[in-house]
Image 1 (cartoon, rainbow, N blue to C red):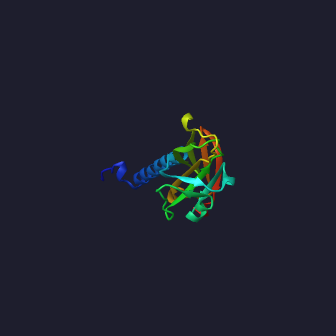
Image 2: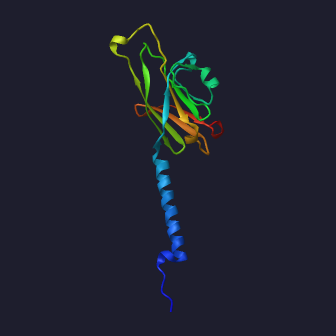
Image 3: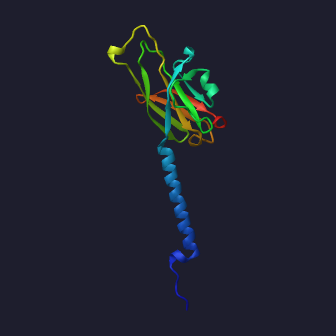
Length: 172
C-alpha cells in the first residue's frame, strides 16, 4: 500500500495554489490601479508668451511644442525622450507675485489628477500695474502614463476640477 501524499505535493493541490496566488495578485493590482498611486514629477518654471492661452491646460511632447506658448526660465529641463510636459496656464492675475504650486500628482486608472494651489503675493509685494499669468508645468515619465485608451488629465485646485484634457494613447 502506498503512503498518501500531502495536498501541496499533488498536481491538483499545485494547480489550486497557483490559481489562488494569481487571483490574489490580480486583486492587489486592481486595488492599486483603482485607488491610485502618486507619480514622481519634475516642476518646471516658465513664462507664458501667448496671453490668449491663459486659463487653459496643455500637453507638450516636445520642446518645439512648448516653445510656441511659453519659455522655460529655470535650469531644470525635461528629458524629452523619456518625459512629457503637462501644463496649466492660470487666468490673468491683477498683480505680480502669484504662483501655482503643485501639491501632488496621482494616477488613478485612466486619469492623472494634478492637485495644485494658487498662492497670492504678500500684501507688501502687490503691484497694481502688473498683470501676471501664473504657469504650472510638470514633467512626467512617459512610461508611467501609457494607457490603452485616452488618458484624462485633471487639474484640481482646492479640491475641485478647474481644467481637464485628454491625451490619445498614440501621443505619449
